[in-house]
Image 1 (tube, rainbow over the protein chains, first blue to last red):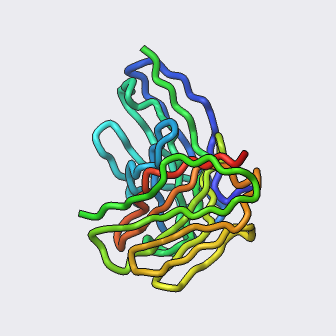
Image 2 (spheres, chains in turn orange, blue; image 1 turned 180 degrees about the vertical axis):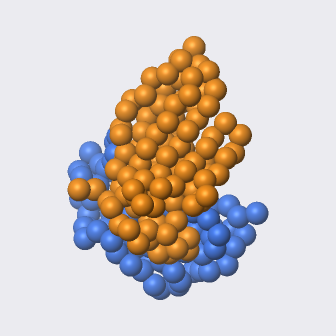
Amino acid sequence: RKEVEQDPGPFNVPEGATVAFNCTYSNSASQSFFWYRQDCRKEPKLLMSVYSSGNEDGRFTAQLNRASQYISLLIRDSKLSDSATYLCVVNTGGTNAGKSTFGDGTTLTVKP
Amino acid sequence: SQTIHQWPATLVQPVGSPLSLECTVEGTSNPNLYWYRQAAGRGLQLLFYSVGIGQISSEVPQNLSASRPQDRQFILSSKKLLLSDSGFYLCAWSGPTYGYTFGSGTRLTVV
């Protein structure tokens, strides 16, 4: 079993749709969690951190469920520009250590 | 503000040739530095990380090596490339409060 698992998709949704991605992790000692966005042939870029209480940034909402060991990303009112691969990242050593594990990513395509 | 530079952007090298990829960070001191590799259609694999000059931790045994000769310089090397070394190589640094900032990456094709 992988340490961090994501549904690879692809998710194909129309503009304006709401889409949700889940990511499960196996290490219960994991301390910090992030979502990254990666455009085709580009480097990943931090989308948002995931806090225990859940957090929202515009159309994006991230949630953490420690009991079930998963994090989620919800995108509302999808835009064409949201098309990308979304990577889940789990860190077992705090935010400043070298023990982050990346999921393989979930690909989203938003269509007109 | 902090910036990270990585070069070259693309590289085509024959099997058995050496490799040297360089990464430099500006605007921060004593950063944690990382080398990741991403195979086509796959996730990121941590290759090396460094918490300071001369301190290198290897995560995956292979024919690659890393060095940190200066605080803000991280180098990935190989003496003899294999076909399986092809991939997208990403340098990153992490700060004290949040996740990684990646360089723009080097797309390596070994032929």
